Amino acid sequence: MVPDVSTGSDTQGLLIYLFGPGRRDEHTDAHIVGAWDMAGAPDPGRDPTVTYGQLAKRLDHHVDLRTRELGTRPPKHVWHCPVRTAPGDRYLTDTEWAEVTRRVVAATGIAPVGDDTACRWIAVRHADDHIHIMATTVRADGRRPRTNRDGQRAQAECRKIEAEFGLRRLKSGDLTAPKTPTGAERARADCQGQEVTPREWLRERAYAVAAAVHSIDDYFTVLASLGIQVKTRIGPESGEATGYSLAAPGDNIFFGGSKLAPDLSYNRLTERLPTQDVADRPKAVADPAEPWRRTDSAARGVLTALDSGDDATAQGQLDAFADTLHNLARATPGPHQAELQAAAKAFNRARRSAIRADHQAATELRQAARELAYAPNLPGGLAIALVFTALHLARAAAHWHAQRGHEQQAAAAEEAFRHLQTGYQQAAAPHLAGLAQRAPRRQTIQRFETAVREAVPDHADRILTDLAWPALATTLARAETAGHTPRVLLAEVAASRELDTAERPAEVLNWRLTTQPNKRARAARQPSPVLGAAAAPPAVQPSAPAVSPTHEERRRHR
Image 1: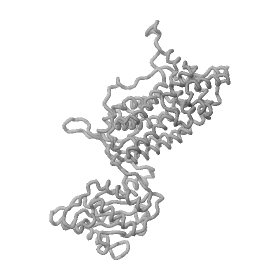
Image 2 (image 1 turned 90 degrees about the vertical axis):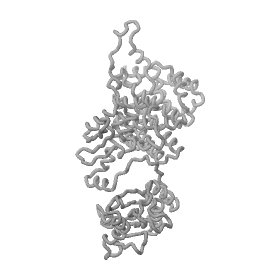
Image 3 (image 1 turned 135 degrees about the vertical axis):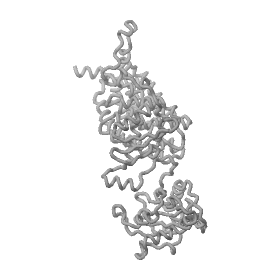
Image 4 (image 1 turned 180 degrees about the vertical axis):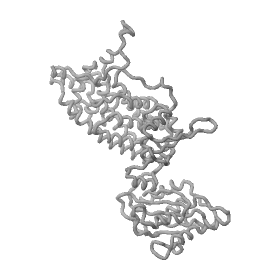
């Protein structure tokens, strides 16, 4: 059950909308189901002789008295709160909706129980699944009602009503959710044939750009390059920017950063996007796979932060992880990209909570994620390994939020997990099958089986019977060619995090091995100790696969 509180100044105008046909003729059988005084509230929906003006006059009675007394009309005196049941809920009767209304106006301070001088209000039903509560916020004693935190109080009362009425239990809010589009915004988007409103479209573009840039100036520059209109607010004393607003290309409606999402405000952005010199930005690296490995390594640190007990650090890491998801989706084109984009969008809700994030604690991950945004595309192993890491981080984030009662954030992280899981399955299945087809000779596999039993004795049987074992054998062969000792490497990656809860331990080890560097290629890129700088390689080397082909693969192609 979802309430949505807003205020206005036109009583009759709102009545015309509530009892009218709706913007798309969606209103049917509009009528009053509850009022401050059912006998004193004429119903245009049931009595054709009643006009909107007559009902507006009754509702505005105390407002008009106060206007004559003060000489000016009280501002924003119309209080409006639609209440909608969740999709799939049963339809409530008029009597049930009347009870819902009485409880909501009591909880929000519009009409406390037993208060004979409370505001006048009505509830109009013009659809099966929702009502509109409207009130005029001047009491009979001339005072304004105490409606501070009315939206939060309406939410809390709706949670109780859901439990008592047997309705779907929605998640409690914590005032960190982004502002939802208004009905007018949705109607405008429908008229223009758009699936999302300009507010939602701008929000996702702003998040994606903020994840990739290195300074607040770059943020505005990239947004403008996308055709988005940017206005900055300059402080009169400092002469520096203090805020900004955005509008979609060709649109004339601007939204402030905080109106898109709390963490897109100017102040919040500057906490994680400080001004940097060009010299501080990432330079080209010799190994194009290095940004992928660095991001995967830094992302694994989020798990440690979630277990540390330092909530501010953990929240900061989750915020940086959200940026990582945006850049990962951008850097991995393919059939699974849509799922990664959906995961990044869903996790935006999990990146913030009532806990203030320590962004400095996540500097390593944020910098690695930004490098990933500009890294060359490396389809295959490294990209899938990072998706696999992200998959487990999303599930851990959901658990962390749930432990702290962050219901909306936990639900968002679970949604991101499901999208990542689907994307991973789409990308990993053919890759693992390809690795299995290139398994080394039987003698080599037997040697690797011995290495597994020596390095990971407690999990050896599960690893060797895992369906992903042939793929892991191929990856071990590649790692050996790249300069690693299989037994030592297996022991290292197995010890990096527990395997007890892994359903497919061979698959887990395969991705951990995939992110290991090519030791021989790295040694070849080091300057010669004899020739010095003259023998140093150029700053950027041609792209190379993340791991070298095995001896078996080279032999087969001869």
